[in-house]
Image 1 (tube, rainbow, N blue to C red):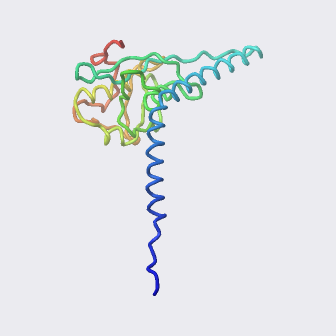
Image 2: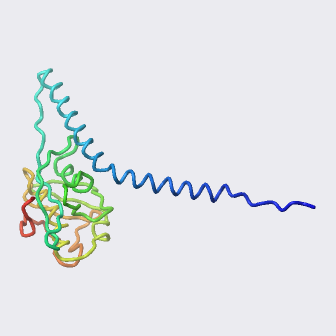
Amino acid sequence: MSRRKRKPRAPWIMSIVLAAVLVAAGAFLYRIYPEYQRLRTAQEAREREAAQTAAESTGRPVPKPVVAQLYFARLVEGKQRMVAVTRELPSGLPPAEAALQELIRGEVPRGCDRPLPRGTELRGVRVSEGVAAADFSEALRSGFPGGSDTEGVTIYAIVNTLTALTGIDKAQLLIEGQRVNEIGGHLYVGEPLVYDGELVVAHP
């Protein structure tokens, strides 16, 4: 009498084990991310200090770090607002680009949120005659969650951050290289915008 062959269990067992490992790894990374950001910031500070020391020892002029005002989203009594955070920008990028990259990828202050929709990418920034044209991916518009205050925070987090930099008076928003009239249907962004502090609150 022939024996019935059993179906191998290894493939689906391995799938379950792999899924469990991925979930555990994701949870671990989520928990250590703030610590990673803190360590990265400290490492960048040490690198800047070492570069400054090296430059001073050779007698070369030491470029001063650029300090910017970055505007992050903050929920205040159920309403979307934003706060200004003073931060030294990482070297290696023009200040306008570095400041916007901090909004997208930099450390988020405690109690705040990123002002730009998830998945937004900065395609570039061009500064000419006091106007900074900031070009973003389509996610800035397609990922917008809705709400007039939220739209105001998204737009003016960009505008206020840029106009706080030396040499920039206005900011023009572009999406995929093109001017657009709005990103959420509430505010007109078809022309260069100036600083607006209506939604800005004090950082506690």
